[in-house]
Image 1: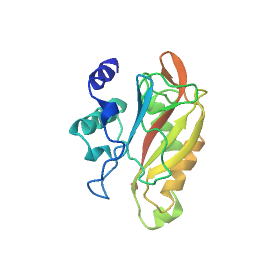
Image 2: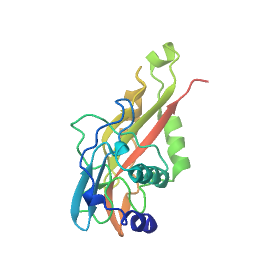
Image 3: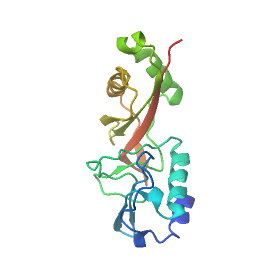
Length: 193
């Protein structure tokens, strides 16, 4: 992570425009909120800005090992990314040590497979798909602010949210040795055998 922060610190991020004109309405948006030397900066529609913003977005995706879908609604003006030390109430998307389900990834997959109840409507219509949810894991390991960022419908979205809200406490993420609130993106795949 330190190498990544050092790499992007060479860019003149504070001199970039705040909003770029989107290339196309149906493409995922690349929105950033970050702090450079104590100065906050927000960039909307970064996919239309300098090419290195796309490179930064891809690097972040690879570091957190997940695809980041961003809502395009204007109400979504919260931070998408914070790099460096945040204030006590900051929520991080990228942290030094990511939050972890108790027992790790295998335990998480086991929890999902044993707690998901396939919705009747989806069964009747033979619907399968991947629901992508985003939620915050607090510095106490609690889950809050669960939302669907890529929906399938037919009751699958609601079931994904339900099973996430019912999860046990997580091991919280840490930044600079301190437990922090952090965002987590979780794809849940619904398949019929």
